[in-house]
Length: 383
Image 1 (cartoon, helix red, strand yellow):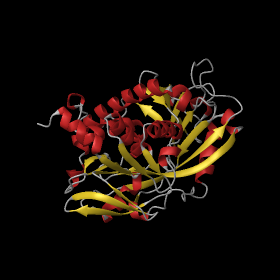
Image 2: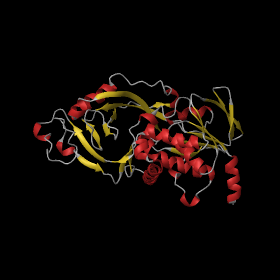
Image 3: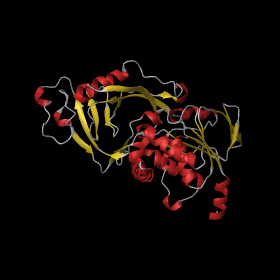
Image 4: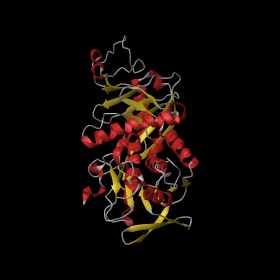
């Protein structure tokens, strides 16, 4: 068994390179730094959080991942970790963290008036007043006990700033073009700026582009990207903290998240997934024609306040997916020191904290008594 002193000396000398500057990469860097590792470099080919990490809704749910027991436990752990981070970094002021309420709702343009009359005395969703909302569908599905939200771009910025203050290095507009290996071990990376970095550990956190690293490691599981669209609306009247998850006649499922800064995030309209190598590069992703317009249209139909609001942003990003819908977190098969964290789907913001902490535990071998179980997410499960 390795002594704590020997373990500490190794950590002080360990050189870690993290490929990817989204929410996962920055959380991995954060928890590695908290574990005592000092030589960490985050390499990002574009800007930090310039893909899904900066364009997601930032909705957090404690117990909505119950389709898989280990994912359910993992999500509950991550929800609690987000509360810890919000306390440490003053999340309310720094990145709009708050608890909120969540509701379901259905919209059907063909309904009779008697089926769409909403209770004028209801306590919640008073702003959700469109004429074709199915009255009986408006139900509570989450309370401030189990749902929360944050602004993902502001969160990444907060964590990245803290990491920088601790000496963690960040290289933006820089790509890893090749990996130097010795047998099954990564020993360094070559960068697009024609420099090289040595590494004792390499971590792949490239979101939906992670699968492209199969060029370097052929045992890496495949990843995919599913294009999703979103808009940000600034209404004249601030809405309460009530998130709405809609069903639109089987067509698509818009989601509406009022934010503490007065803006309202609306997302939906997804497309078929594409392999990593077929995805456009971060920073070049544009919304598909009419997709964002559909979101503004439905937002206006369900709320007079949103109808009159100004669209500040129309955008698109790719959600990272895997074959079985579970993330891949752990050591890449047939390697000694290469790790991966990707494929979180729509729960990447929620599960970022537990992903960062669990991977830091795996890499350093520390905190065995608090070890987060990631067996179900082992990248080797596809081999």
